[in-house]
Length: 112
Image (cartoon, rainbow, N blue to C red; front, top):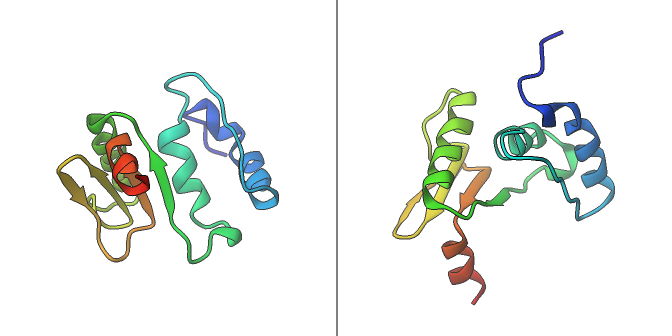
């Protein structure tokens, strides 16, 4: 059994089970625990997510780009494949993306 790198990895199965039963789940953990980089990739194979995408809000542009790059590297891909991002004046997604990390600017434009 592999050693856990991030504390949130210990609760990912509980998060996935909660999301299968409920639409909304709040995951609260300190910075650096793996919420951004571990949870979305772990949920992609969940049956209730079949045919759907994950839209993740990251308030800072640099953090959105960095998180997308890190998660994409875990898949052995470049940003814009399975994992993309959209921030002010820049977007890197393809037709096959499943995780989109967006800045609050993007959310403001979309929902106004």
